[in-house]
Length: 191
Image 1 (spheres, helix red, strand yellow):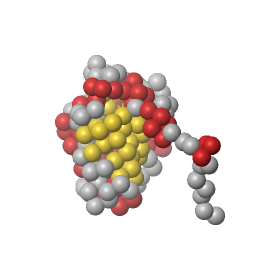
Image 2 (spheres, rainbow, N blue to C red; image 1 turned 30 degrees about the vertical axis):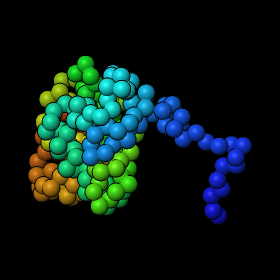
Image 3 (cartoon, rainbow, N blue to C red; image 1 turned 120 degrees about the horizontal axis):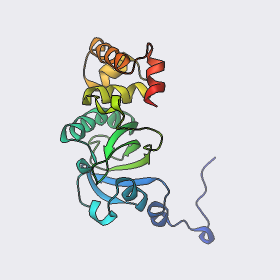
Image 4 (cartoon, rainbow, N blue to C red; image 1 turned 180 degrees about the horizontal axis):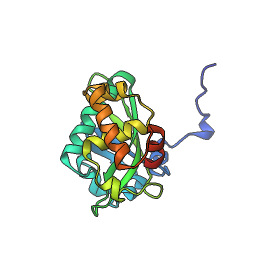
């Protein structure tokens, strides 16, 4: 059954819906913030006007985190048109926070060219600055984020361009670091 357009009496103001959405949203072009809503600005503790025209890089703990995340998600955006994960990002005051990020590309042939992102602040549920989380390496954070998604070692290896054996080594380190015996227990601790 085809979807019906809203009647003229019920026109939807899509711009107002974007700007007033209760979830953070940002439009990106080649990883530059073209526009964003107030909820997005509030998550990162900065004025909306100060974000527009700037790189998403300013919202990551390090340049390396920004680069690796971009490299990791590009193949998923290209093949599926969308991508989602939980990741550590940074507020304007330097505080590290967990956020859930969902992204969509309109240009699969060039996945970062035209994107729409939704952000949910998970910092009240997860403490980034706990003793263990603060000591995670960038690679451990990448692997932990994909484990949380329920990915297998083989899938993680493919996503990160490393062997499944290397994924097992990092997973073992995380199990020891969090003093757990199984991946299920690890994911529970991470969440």
